[in-house]
Image (cartoon, rainbow, N blue to C red; front, top):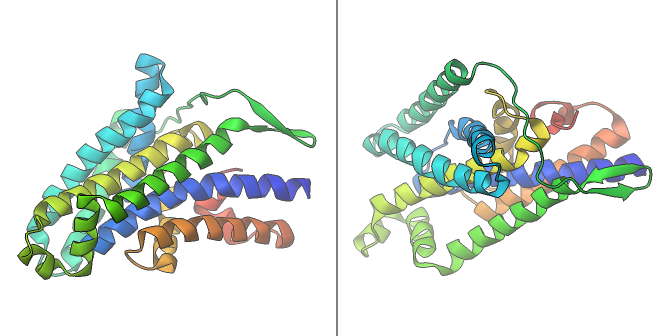
Length: 270
C-alpha cells in the first residue's frame, strides 16, 4: 500500500505537467486543425530558460514566469510565422512545418548546450513524511500550480473576450471572421498560449527530471495519446485524461509489473 501511494502521488505530478503540454496541443488543434510536432521542444526550452534564469538571478519563480513568457512569445511567433503562410493548403504542410521546426530547435539546442544534463534545485526543501518515506513537498506544489494554471485557462476560454473568440474560431472559422473576430490575431494567441503551457510545464518539471536536449521526447508521444483520447481540440478533456491515464497507468504497473508505464513520460520517476 505504501508503494501504491507513492506511485499515485508521482502519477499526479507527471500527469499534471503532461496535462499542460496536452492542453496546449489541444488548443492549437481546436483552433487551427493542425498538430504541433514542435511542442516537445518547447517543453525542453522551458527547462533551459528556467535553468539559466535561476543561474543568473537565483529566483525560481522568476524562472518559471520567464519560461512561460519567453517560450510563449518566441515559440508562438515562430510557429505563427511558419504555419500562417501554409494555412488553406494541404493539411500535411503545417504538420511538416512544425515537425521541421522541432528538429531545428532540438539540433540548435544540442549545438548550443551539448548533451550535458543540467540539474535544477527545487525551491522547496520541505519533505512530507509518508510512512517510512519523506516525500518532496515540491512535487505536490507542481500539482497545485498546474491545477491553478489549467483552471485559469478554462476560465479564460469561457469568460474572456479572447477566450470566446478562440472558441468561436474553433467552432466555425469563416462565420467568426464574418462577425468581426480578428482571426489572424486569434491564431497567434493560440500559438502563444500553447507554447507558454509547454514552457511552463518544462520549467516546473525541471527539478524532478533535470534539463537535457531530448527531455521533451519523453512526454510528447503520451501527450498526443492524451489529446486523442480526450477529444481532438478539447482543452478540458485533454487535461482530465492526462491525469486519469497516468493514475490508471501507475496502478497497472503496481499490480502487474512493467508495461506501457515504463516508457516515455511514464518512466520519468525511475
